[in-house]
Length: 166
Length: 166
DNA sequence: CAAATTTCAGATAAACTACTCTTAATACAA
DNA sequence: TTGTATTAAGAGTAGTTTATCTGAAATTTG
Image 1 (spheres, rainbow over the protein chains, first blue to last red):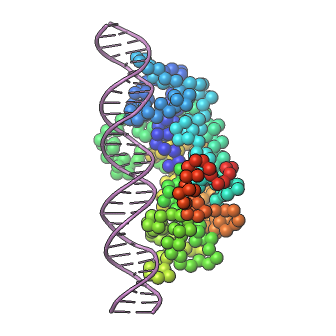
Image 2 (image 1 turned 180 degrees about the vertical axis):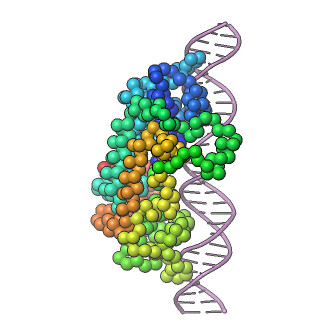
Image 3 (image 1 turned 45 degrees about the vertical axis):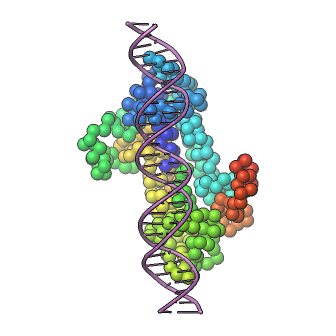
């Protein structure tokens, strides 16, 4: 996949925070519960975002994490950058180091135009917009709508997905 | 990265074959040598391509692998499909299973247009074109121009890359 | 037929990613 | 001050990907 799982978790958490009516401290436990993500793992992921200055954190009762800026001032690219690094938007399609105009790979020209479009999309997509969409009917943020029970789990394992493809 | 390393190796090998003046059996050892890839690993990767019908193989002296069709009839997407699977061009940005019009993620609309562009690019980029480009001056296919010696390796580790960035 | 060359197939090892667990540090509340 | 809730930090575990190695099967050449 384009993004690492850590990165996806971070993005999902950020969108969840942006989807709340007000920007306030939310405990990581709550976020992990809503998104069905391992609490301990999410903790580590969100540390990246606080260290990058995208989130502010507060320890102790009623503490948690909150967006450091208004959701309209944080782009999807900001979040991706902080977790997976900016290589996603810079890398050669074949991962060749130093691939550039002076020493290109065969797909260089085609890929750079593609890649800059991708970068532009992620840079202009703000958490505000994504949060608004997340609040719309029939839009979901995480894997399952609720906690997975054994029956559901078995159903998905048998390929019985509850939604149609594109 | 978007593509797995196995997939990149397969693509590089396919482009190398397409860059040759005539389509003939080439030993995997030769390809691995030219591209600085582990011979045994490349062998396993190319087996995927032969099983997918993109290559034909021949055992014994003067044997090897060759393109099963004309290089203009094999797209980059064909090769990617055969190794990494077609999920690359179908997957949700966040990897949510069943993400579609009925049950979308917040980024669904934006991502699908992006993804279809990517798919279109890879489907229309043929090995013929990529092979031609590979034959042009200053275009390279693989990681290093020659085998890496310890001194070179050390130099790159110190950030001394022999090519300029975009 | 024997020897050399090559792909095919499977076992093993190393490296990386994803995840879990434990212990600290911090802040509030009774 | 003691207990509790919360993030921070880091060590440890499991699974996947990447890479290496060995032997077998196939095919040509002498």
